Length: 120
Image (cartoon, rainbow, N blue to C red; front, top):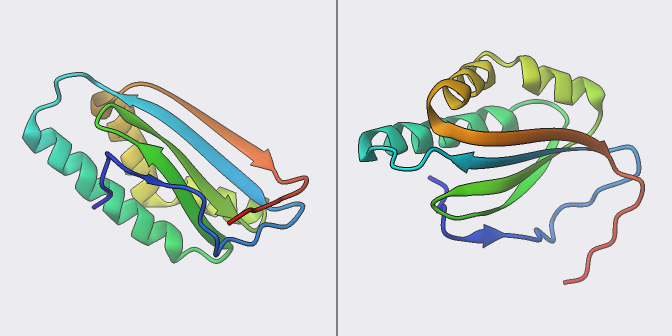
C-alpha cells in the first residue's frame, strides 16, 4: 500500500505535454479512524491505483501524504480517459466510501497542462 508518511514527487519518468489532464485530489482524513477502517482505506487506495493504471490514457501519478491526508495528482492523456476513470465502478465505490466514512474534507480539480518543466 501507499506509505502515507512519504512523498513521491516529482516522478522523472512522467512526460507531460500541453493538453494532457491532471486530476488533483486533496483530502484530509477523519481524525481517529479505527485501525480496521484505515486498513480498508489503504486496501481501496491500492485497488483504485491498480484499476487506474489499466485505463487507456493513464500516464501516471504523484503524491505527497502523511497520516492526516494527501495531495494526489493523476495524469491523463485526455478528457475521455479522465471520464473513463471517473465512471469506473471501483472508483465510484471509493468515492462513496470516502464521502461517507474516510474524508473529513476534500477537493478535486481537473486541470489542463499548458506547459511542463521538470528538473531532476
